Image 1 (cartoon, rainbow, N blue to C red):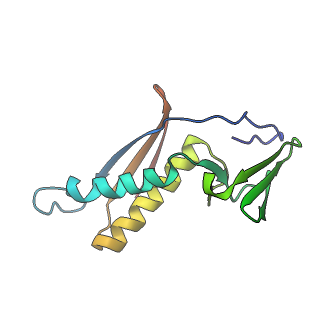
Image 2: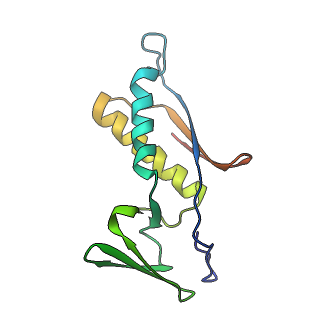
Length: 141
């Protein structure tokens, strides 16, 4: 997590928990969406983030350089990191807050559901919990 004053949190990890709530205009087969269809999509999106160093690719507070098999990163506080590309996921987000990750996950779920099932939720809500009791929720219509 990068802060506006140029400081950052130390490198650390989370065991995120993701919760999805959604509704539709009409119930098809008495369901908003079949759990057997949506669970693999949510799992796919979550698995893509698992065991990766998440980097905010749209941040102006970090410089990311592509160097052979590594990404080199410099932050405003002068910190320098070099990480194997296989351990890094650069996300199209401004920061790696639970809020921004919830937005990213929501958009990915909506995209995959639309591509695979030509379906649009009326509303979709994604909660990302960093630790018990600390969560962020994003709701999209």
